Image 1 (cartoon, rainbow, N blue to C red):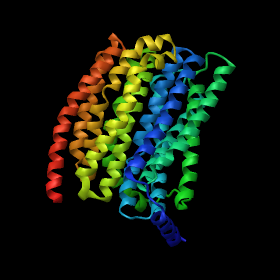
Image 2 (cartoon, rainbow, N blue to C red):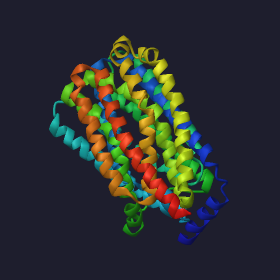
Image 3 (cartoon, one colour):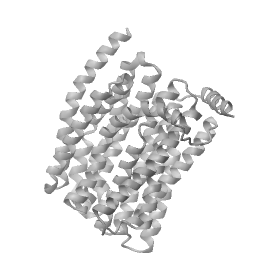
Image 4 (spheres, one colour):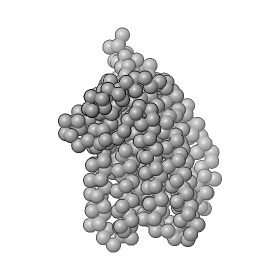
Length: 429
């Protein structure tokens, strides 16, 4: 039975026709665009369904869920890319990956909820519904991350479009129902609506894997299966955390150190700017996958990926800069007045973020984890500290501080990237 389980999916994966890196990249970007678009619509409905305080608490909860998912994935998504790229049986790799993230997601979600109970024992958000939906969101969110990267490794990154679209529509439908019933929905109800989309996306992803490579999820807890994935994954995960943590941590810090209202005004601007940033991020994942499969073409792959990151990401950034006010106005006058300039400034950081993603992808392929992690920690800390320092002056001042720090970091990282690629090209030739 075990031998059949290892051989059959491997043969299916070999027979599966891989899409080109460009097609996979564009498909991933469209998928994340659908996820971000439905996410933005969710916040529009939420802003009209309840009060600014509840929206702010929900943004803090969503940020906490996303932090838990980033920690819980433990780099298993990147490890799947490396392992499948080296020819290991996809079923065995995925069973181990899903076992890891299932346990880690549950433990981290419970840990956060217990910590929140001690820090804010009188919080309205600590209801039974909040606990249940928070745990489900953390577990399904980590599984969606593994699904994304597993399908990238199989050359089918674009398949994410369907699951994120359907999941987003399910979340929107639930939120619209809540908004229609009454104004003043609590944060735990909004979080439940948001979690529904993640759960639906996860179920569709499992079905897609079964259809493409005949994979049936059987998560394993066997340490011998987990160890190789964790050895590959944890360095990658630490690097990923340096990329994502600043944007996820800042809303939490704003909600608890400044005010929930400030977090509510900042988060939509950041979320929409992240829609543009996802282009270089997702193309960087494909760049990493192709670099593992063909390291001799690293320089060529990197420059091609960087160009497409700029082309696709800049289109989104220009749209955000031009239509910042009407987009934010959909949430209400307060959001448009507070965050229009902030959104434009954050969108203008696209080029800097593309440089950072290209550098990190190259470091992943070459195993330069320590260097990239140190750079990411320093840059991420500087981003959060500068934004918090400017928080009292409003979202625009925060975004300006963020962009200045991001571009200073990108210049330094870009020079280092050029040196690494020159050396890699000489070694390859």
